[in-house]
Length: 228
Image (cartoon, rainbow, N blue to C red; front, top):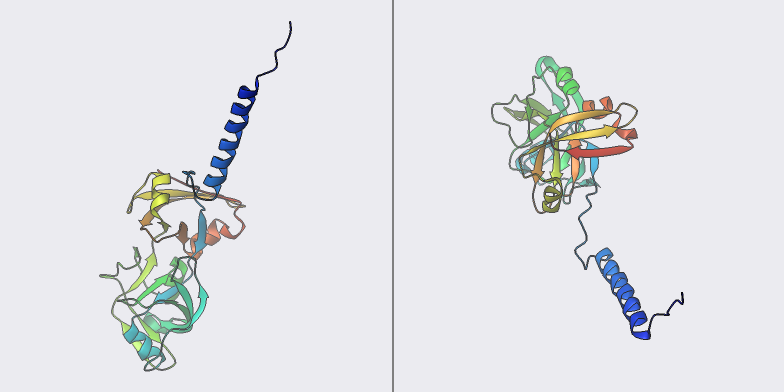
């Protein structure tokens, strides 16, 4: 049998097809094509902290005082401030230096882990940030003054921030619940993370100190979100 060499037109057609495919792949890599969304899942421990109103910042740290940025956090616009306060619970139990997070908010709020709540003697309910109605309060002591919160102490409910592309990828919407699988020296699955989705958020899981220590999050080798 004699093998026939392809004609010039066939060769040009093959070369043209290869070039087009390479250009399409390059455009997708640069964001110019319909490349599939690949979420970058990050999980962070949200240690004890508080959010303050402008009024309470001035009472605790002095008239005209503004929070000072110490460290930018993962979510755009959020930061850990240089400022700390003392938290005082019932029977004068206290946590001496609790970090303030910025920016300021319409309502002051304290977020603790379960062991923090026990230490302070406060029965803090599990709530999403911002849901402080009918929650216990505490006393905040700053270098310039004292604020008595009538309500606002919570144990932050585990949750995951998502952008809109992330919700499409995982097939969820704002307010849904997902589970988090953590592979580490102490592997576990945390159930019932609340999805908090909007156009500006970056994909990030928030769990508290107790949860992070229990699953050895610091040494995790793999994370995965999945629907129940």
